[in-house]
Amino acid sequence: MRNIKQKKERPIEPDQPDPDECCGSGCQRCVLDVYYEKLEQYEKDLMEWLAEQDEDQDDGNNQKG
Image (cartoon, rainbow, N blue to C red):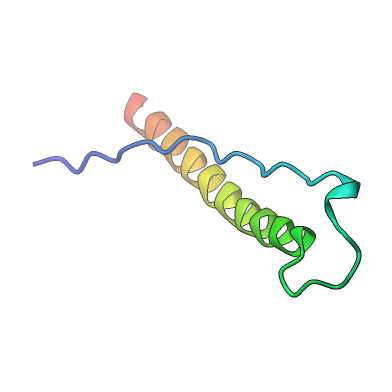
């Protein structure tokens, strides 16, 4: 039985909040904090996705020869 990998879709970058969405009062969960957390996760997911794309491309090149 062959192990078939399901292709993941490219991660989507989170929308940056508008400058007026932050009230500037030092909220514990500021919209900017949430955005930067999502951005950090997006960057990790994107690096993982890109690495998988490279692996898939390498596998395809190895099978052609």
